[in-house]
Image 1 (cartoon, rainbow, N blue to C red):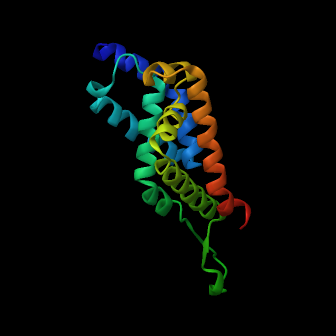
Image 2 (tube, rainbow, N blue to C red; image 1 turned 180 degrees about the vertical axis):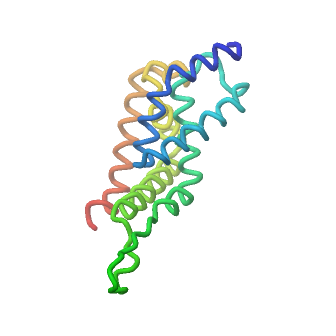
Length: 172
């Protein structure tokens, strides 16, 4: 794929990128920043893209990795301070409730990513590919496995994650 085709393909998925960035950041400005960071990273690494790979999945994986690698930066930016103009100074600094929600979301993403990374390779790889946007058939072809095996491994990976993360989210 030449540079012009690559750029056209990247432009064609801008809406997908924006939606995913908003899902990750829960903030329009941060989503735009994440999209720009992702676009730059993808353009800088276009030589690493393999032709027979799902382009959208590859780009969104880059975006997710940038977000996860920089989650603390995003979390810090979301700690907004509100100033109350009343003379009563006890309410001078209030943490924005959405900042707390974003922090929780970032930590949940980090915990989920950690749990995925600790799955055994037979479960982790097909699940990661699936989460990156690949279809079952593409994963089966890439891994040289029957379609049913890929579906089973993704199912079992989800089960393992549900069991591992159940205590964190349902017994709180």
